[in-house]
Image (cartoon, rainbow, N blue to C red; front, side):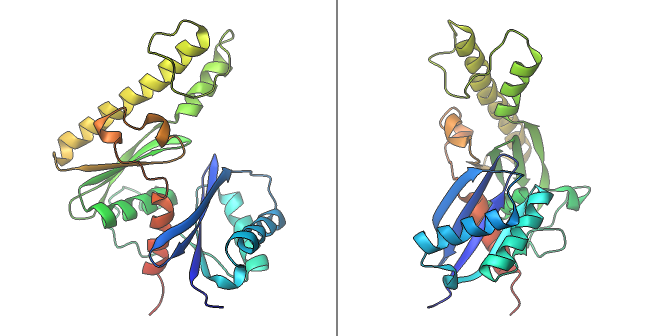
Length: 260
């Protein structure tokens, strides 16, 4: 059997994505809740189950690439891949080749997912470009016309804000993060949903406009992350949604770091 697929893993604080890279594209992908209590054996058995039932078995893998912002989970996934798949994953971490100058004051402080996003966006769109990632945090990653990682913006994620309202205000309930019936809520849950939805639409619009004023009108924007579809089309900056961007960025970094 030809070893023609790369398994790509993106471990976030809230969700983990697993995809399969073949012939320059993600051909299959899965997204599930990140569970910090999952053991290495549980990870490994889940990987083998997916590979056997959907991808023709682990013998098709030519490698595994991993980006993670949750160190304890990183170690267990590495162990799982070694034990159950026979591959030591390539890990996106400081010191790898990115093809992109990192102009952050401390380059090591930039999350692996943010580097992957920036690399994928610049490779596919050119610069200047901005990646808006709506996950546990809401982040903006900014790449110059010359392909330099300039820095970014970090704001609390929409679900963090929803949880804070519930935890810190005694009479406010926990609400589902969703588009409300309208901007004027006629009950408390709808009023909270309106504040979250339109508040974050406004946050994205204002920050993106300020970034564009610095980089210029030709700046391209792309959004990713599990909550990006919720706010699609709420702003000119949210017209391009790509939930596989981070996985492709990890795959690009893997290929960039393979020895000739």
